[in-house]
Length: 267
Image 1 (cartoon, rainbow, N blue to C red):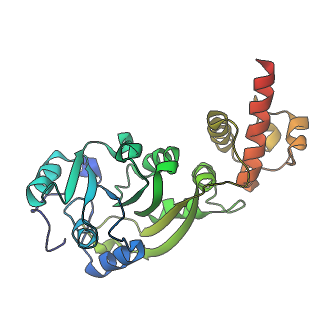
Image 2: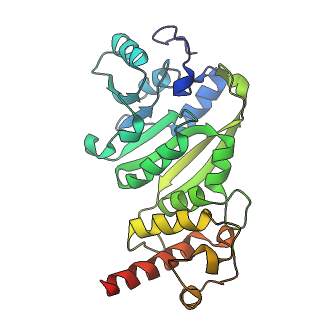
Image 3: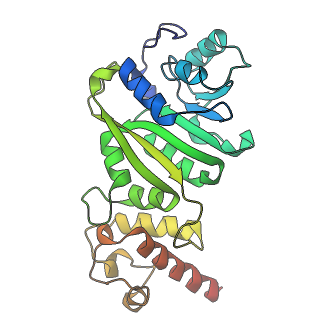
């Protein structure tokens, strides 16, 4: 817990609260973010201010999204609104476009919302300058996995289409209060402004990827059932007998674009 924490708070399991307390890890995270005065920084789940305080020493004003009403009230009492604007509510509903310019998003994400929050962030990537997050190591491994890796899946494809992702360093349970039962890792996300292969229909892409990985052990001719037949799979340069976990992001984009084009022509 930071010396500048707003007040003592008992961690709540329903919010997945594990407060970062290791000063060395805090310095390493802030150093990785390296904010400058002109940056618009949004912290997700500031908790007791372990990251908030050192970040505020580098930027004139920050925003924070906090779902715990007691912590939100304590932050408002502790920091003047000219320095910290607290948005009380669920980060899964937060509209980053509301702030008017690209933001730098940071946070020690509660593990119980990390995956849905990352999908939410992906939908708003055009409003994001970059992201630095502490996550469960298992989630990070899935995010950075490449086609053919055991951890490669829906999360890998959907995030790698939107972001360049870099695992920075790992963090042990002892760096938190209370200690989680898992290893953690810090990751950096940089939005990709011009993907090498552009999706024609975001909804078709998302549904196809989710459908395929719900059948990840099946061959594509079965995993893509109801979307592409064997001839269509061959026409986009994929092997009907390959499995979803071996198909790279661009392969999924080609497949989804074929579906979108075929459905558009049929309407």
